[in-house]
Length: 247
Image (cartoon, rainbow, N blue to C red):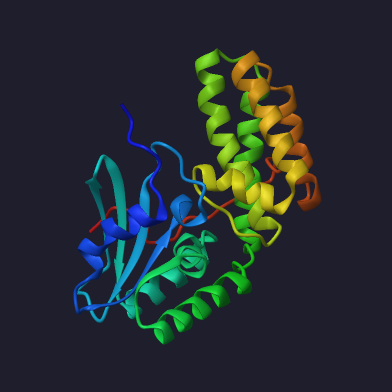
């Protein structure tokens, strides 16, 4: 039997195991529990910040049948991860702090960390470089061409799974929007354009359920056209000169 949906009060009680120590300077409950949308099977996500750690750590525990995901940081590691996430266009850690519920720590420090995290979110991701834009268009165009050919259902599933991720991520980053991973990728699409998110859902359901690639291939053209359309012929990438084995 699955455990009941975790509540804020339950999460607060469980997190005391890690947040009562003197080295903890701030802690935030994040995810679906903090938003009040948790269901049976939801886990407890928390960012816990210490005065100093030798290295940032991600830990998974289980308490009362509920998975507990802990992101352990100090202020310096937190800032480093925020910057790496910004470069990747996936601000999950900054969002956890900016939107999280404080469960421990100094109110002034909590307010400052939230301000810094929100500043990361407000600044948005860096634009894609032209070379990366071309490389992504090429990869997506190649997947679309593969999918449009007669393929077995197993091959369709493999190509379609990769295409969904690559196309959605490109669409978001090319538009200057934050992207995401897993379920966060669809949520990011919905924030950008609910109609486009619905088009992704319908196109790939047609592919997975009925084996019809038509809508998914048309979606590729819809998403690539503002950036020059499909790109295959003439694409050229030069590997660094030191990518070789030798004496």
